[in-house]
Image 1 (cartoon, helix red, strand yellow):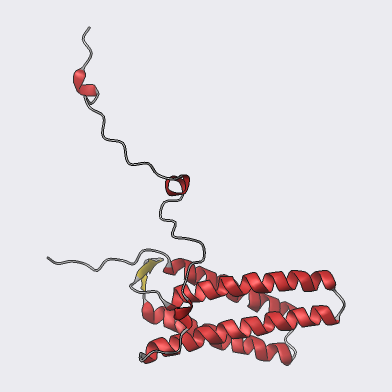
Image 2: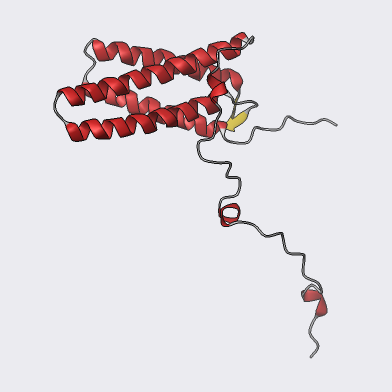
Length: 179
């Protein structure tokens, strides 16, 4: 009984070069929250980029102001544990939202989301709406928005900002080539 020599390759393919654990287990990993503060620079001649960055700064500034107000109210009410947790969450929240907004502000190309093409124009509309909604949340904070309404809008916007930033991390679609 002769073995079929065609069933197995005679030579094995060359081994890939040595890789790290992270490269093997996290392919495509680019880093943790890496972005440049230049994404927030107002020094630009492009009016669309300037408007985009103003909306990003507005959203980040309002979220930061509301976080600081929350910490102040916790301190005023005597809740030291709530104040400490609020400070920690405010710092992490600031960094996370800054990263998300930088991803949204710097996105290029189009992505397919539920079968629809989403591009730069859609991200710009989202940034404008986000800035306006956050201004509304700030006004509502001082004009009697209830605690439930505040928390639903606060965390709802946090989730939306993260979801849109996640979409921007997808690889842009390649345009059709008719060559």
